[in-house]
Amino acid sequence: ASCTLTVACWSEDGNVSIQTYRPPFEDVTVGSANGDMTLPVYGLSPSAISAVIRLQGDEAREVYTRAMSGEFNDIDAATLVMVLMDDVPLLLALCIAFALGDGESWQVVLDMPTGDQVALFDAALRMTFNREGGAKKLMEIIGNMGNGALPPLAPTPSTNGGEASEQK
Image (cartoon, rainbow, N blue to C red; front, side, top):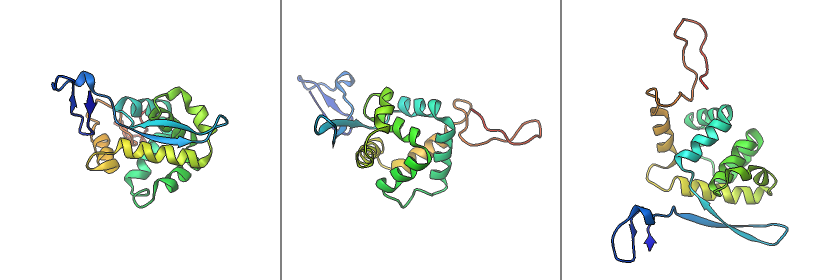
């Protein structure tokens, strides 16, 4: 069976079947004590993004707010990784670990050289946002998802007239 990036899959007999779907990935080669390793990097699924938000909610809200303000609009992946390594290293490591298919491996990612983290995160961005609209479109969708289904990612005004509170 073969699959295209348009999520159309064909079985050996020519029938389209979602059961044969495999997510696309990009191979990235990183260095290790055992020699170079080639790792498959996947796009972050909605469940992976949700897990990162659950595990690193405050940091995810900070990055979301900064992204929506346009702070990251005109920077390349390497610069973004450097900013995230400095400001929210665990959030970055979790994103990379989930893109590698093993959210539990975040501590290994933290110990990787900067160049390898840049290459892995760059591939994760490409694979996550490979559709039209990219990251900006995803942020708009996440921002509009409220409607009681998900807690807002930004502070919300108090209903009793008090100070604004952040929902977690």
